Length: 116
Image (cartoon, rainbow, N blue to C red; front, top):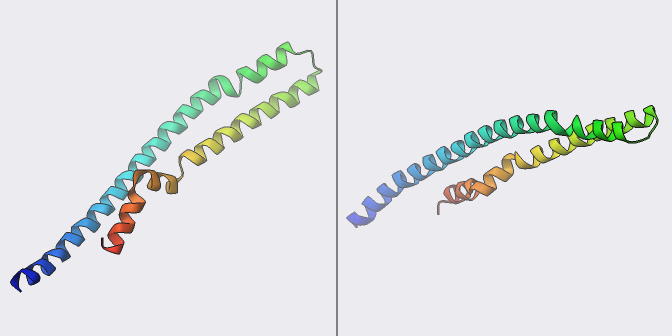
């Protein structure tokens, strides 16, 4: 009987510690996610400015025998395509829902809330 009382008293503290640990874990995942987003954006800026938006469309427009108005449209379409592609990739990679699922924080929070 005494063991049951001590166990029920102890289980309250253990579940509280588990909940606090899950909260710290989720906060750490979100912090790492923020750093990852920063480095992805920095890398994307370097790639976009160095090669994507400038070099490929310019080389294509300089060496193709098109009229100037067609060259301008092609250059703008390339720039728009690169920018939209980079934004779509960053949105997919940096999704908070995807990070919580991949890290296991979502499952951990569900288990802690259910009490198992």
